[in-house]
Image 1 (cartoon, rainbow, N blue to C red):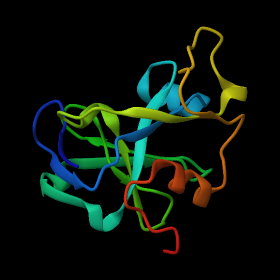
Image 2 (tube, rainbow, N blue to C red; image 1 turned 180 degrees about the vertical axis):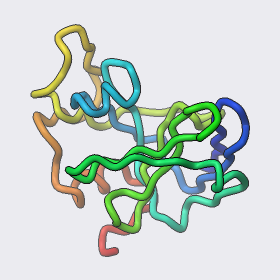
Image 3 (cartoon, helix red, strand yellow; image 1 turned 45 degrees about the vertical axis):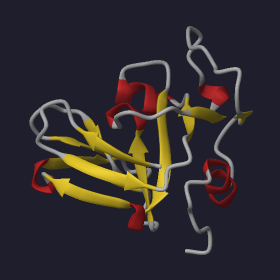
Image 4 (cartoon, one colour; image 1 turned 90 degrees about the horizontal axis):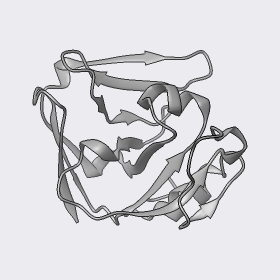
Length: 147
C-alpha cells in the first residue's frame, strides 16, 4: 500500500510505500503534549520506504534531552515524519497521510495514560514501550529488523 502525506499548508509532501495499515497509539505525556490530544497515533517505516516529494527545507525540529524528537512544518506547525532516534526508520504521524484504512495494533505507555484518555480495544497493550524489534515486527510495514 502506498500513501501520500501532506502538511496543513501543503509546503511539505512525501510518499510512503509498503504500508501494512498497522498503527499504534502512544499515551505518554510527551506524545500528549506534542499532539494536544489523549494520545499520538503513528507508525514506523524503513528509511527507503519514504520519499520526500517537496518541502524538506520547510521542516523544523526540536529534540528533548531524552532523545524524543518532533519534526514539524515551519509554516503551519503540522507534524511530519522524523528519523527514529538515529535508526534506519522514520516515525510517521498518521494524521498527515491521505486515503488509507488503519488498524491499531499496539497501545503504548498505558501507565502514563491521561485519566480522560480512551484506549482502543484493538491491539496489544503495553505499560511502557516494548523492545524496538518487537515493536517493528508488530507494525509489519515491510520493515527489516536487522538494520
